[in-house]
Length: 157
Image 1 (tube, helix red, strand yellow):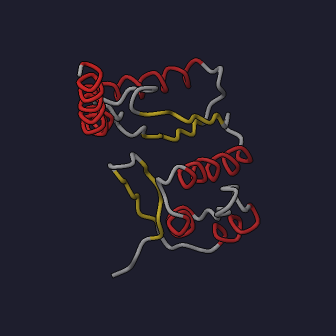
Image 2 (image 1 turned 45 degrees about the vertical axis):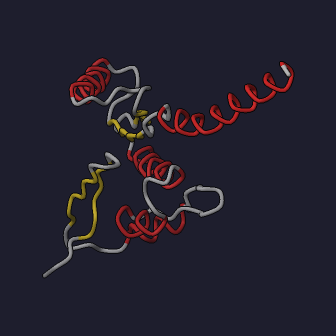
């Protein structure tokens, strides 16, 4: 009789655990990690650039965004090199596409960046073509949910 009761108790314990586990697992899921791309016009070892990044991180922390906890900073240092700007800006957009923060269509339309949907690599030739198209003016687009800022062609009207 004790053996049957033990099996019944184990079964009830397991059943109860099976019901509670999904609820507990759901409750413990961490907040989605946000990614922020930062493109600096200084070198990585430049004290002024470091001070700017520190000030940015401090400001974000005051708003509740902590690097490594609920956001990740992807920093690129262009050091006043136009070629590096042209390479790094599309790279940051491609990272947003890869992390599902920006769609491939939005990368093309808003940022002028062509991203391969399989490898998430920047198609440099198509990106140059997209960015060479004349634009009369640009609007700043801010997406507070994904913490992204970008430029988009101004729509007249």
